[in-house]
Length: 208
Image 1 (cartoon, rainbow, N blue to C red):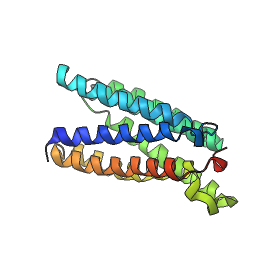
Image 2: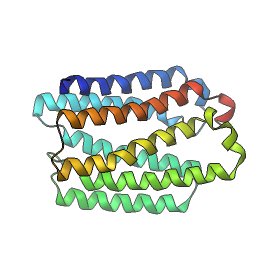
Image 3: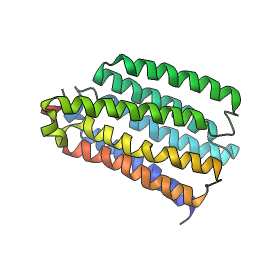
């Protein structure tokens, strides 16, 4: 499978998810998940910018590095508005500290900011743990299939718990190219598949 086709398939998947999120907007427009509509379209815009940068400058690391910081901060903000836990604030400060250090020790334009991604992924794993713990304490466990937040958190968990070893392998063992993109495409399918299920199955009454 051609690497270009794999990259395009990921972008198409993001576009489909954004379109479905737009169509189902009425279901969650008054919920804490309403920001995901804008987030998905911004994500698609970043993907288009990455493709353009690759064609013009023969590099798009800087685009994905900016997006990584943006997306992790968005997710952390969402978890904080959802749970109101001080721990998430501290995790955000720690993540930002790693971002600053990583920018200093690595080339931001021509290299993937590995430590930023790993730090962000680990903070999100903690946040999903906090979310599931909170879910188990209440009665909402019985209606999780209709809760958009559950599907979003599940997608975030499954994607990032697999991305950590993938990023490490890519850096240490030089695991990249077509096979790296295939694994990345599968993980994106899981992530955005969970989002799509959430947008389709969610019920307005459970998104307040």
